Amino acid sequence: MGELEDREAIRDRMTTYGRAMDDGRADAFADCWTQDAVVELVAAPHRELAFPEGRFEGREAIMGWFAGHTHAPDRFHQHRVHGPLIAVDGDRATVESDFERVDESPDGPLALSFGRYRDELVRCADGAWRFTVRRAEIRSVISAPPTPR
Image (cartoon, rainbow, N blue to C red; front, top):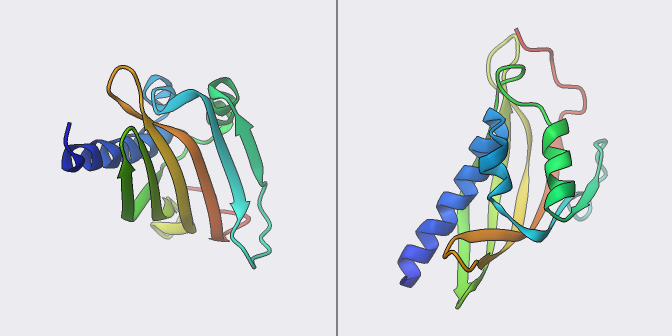
């Protein structure tokens, strides 16, 4: 696989993460991670935010986090990724991208949070790119989202 194909596969993985989270597709979400992956949810540097920071180590812990997260059809939201800067080095890659989460509200779509992802991915034995680290640095968040319609 060439570098352009690797970059596209990594973008696809990033999109799969968001759609699987939003739609509640556990199998697709689980396939995004290596067995020893780490997810970190933290306030961005120089920010003090009221939200539950967390660290989840290993696919099993990450799937526990997923199970406790909101999903359609109980709550509709979309995770959006913008402007990924992808650096591929053999079978490893780093990605820095901006994100936002848009939720439904009684008044229409509402940007619930935004920030920056700092990701590390590896090409696995089956050729698929998977996250080993996803660090979400939250820059802003609505601490009490409105109840959807």
